[in-house]
Image 1 (cartoon, rainbow, N blue to C red):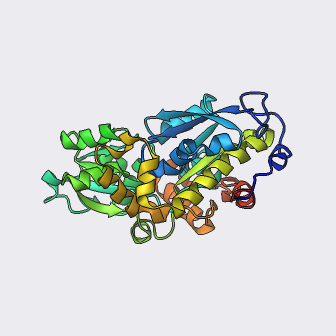
Image 2: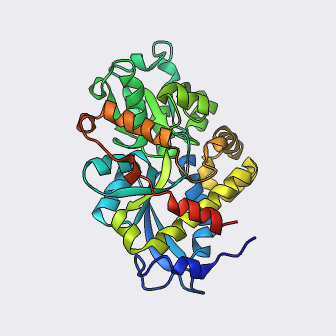
Length: 341
């Protein structure tokens, strides 16, 4: 392994986010607060791997991870100042730029959304596509999150609006599985391993699947960057070394994920992430492993795809012009590629 040049990290910035310790100094760890909505989901697997493998610590960070009930909550925490960084959906950077808040992604984790929309088996005979969602109860991780936007996009394509269905925040993990099993929702827009569990148990019939390139292209017409690390621009300006350290940790996690066997990934995460079925979790990893970014860099066409989707769905976005160049800073991921083996 090529050794990390700590002096190079230090040269990138001055003061740290939450403590005076210097990133990379022997024995020193800078405490940083990160927000995420549904950490156990495969959507955020690079975050868990970076934590469990000690990659954040390797680059001088004591990463405090706050797990919220959905991506929208994580964004609120960043805006409110209770977290310094967020692992969340790229679309949030576009929304915040439209509102005059300079929040930017610094590394891509997922090239495809990996979101699946499924219908409860008991009603599958009359719900064959998104055009049949009218009047149904739809479970999402949280209203306003990427799972919500994805199902809303599918509905909009067939002429339905948000008000045509009821949206229920079911959180991540076991709570989402329970909501479907108890019949509290008719449709679910969610991620693995929740989807894999419901599919294996025969609780849902899958209608839309963006775990694959084909499924993503079918729904969005192209690539669609999803999970990323995003941060306020003032943090980038004041503490670039801290941001670089966080990106380095996630980049190293992505490198590991792309080379690892699904069984190794299952062994690396907490046992509770398996939802009681490790073999099922391994199958879920196999289904989505190709979706993880290999470079940490977002494709311009994919960024535009997300932007066009938001403009079509959100009246507040319809007449707002956003400079996509301000939604993603590629330099951190590019530098990580040089610094991380």
